[in-house]
Length: 178
View 1 (cartoon, rainbow, N blue to C red):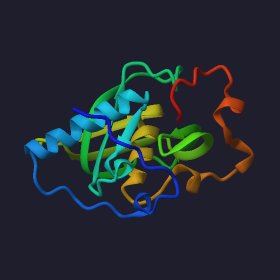
View 2: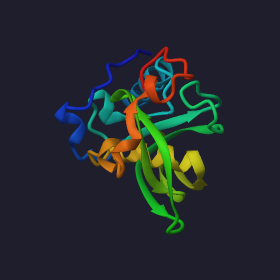
View 3: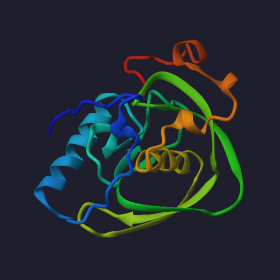
View 4: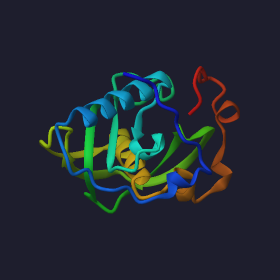
């Protein structure tokens, strides 16, 4: 379809509470999802939330087989997740490096639940319910944060572990910003 502009940190639209999606299986929703996947793939993203392209809906996409921005990350299945609900499966918290397409060129260590259950619906209204851990759990938590107006720097606890990707990870090929 088309590649959309990704909003950058500082844009007040990224701080809004997203609205629930109420109509499924529509041509408009299919076009939005296609645009989101085109946009995410064009910048080698691991995920993208609708608010990042200025669409104030509870819709996230994520997934990849391999990602040059996260070369050690395991495969995450391509997923369209609408009106999501997340629940931790344990109290265990894991620190991990994150970047964001709306915060280009920077990375930081963010604490996240190590295991989560998420549920919601796909673009046709079909139920999604998964228990996940590791990088998959991190990605879905990061993307769903966008739906409540949270960018990952707001979750950083130790700012000595926050900085420019090119300094922190010079080995990564930076063809696209984070």
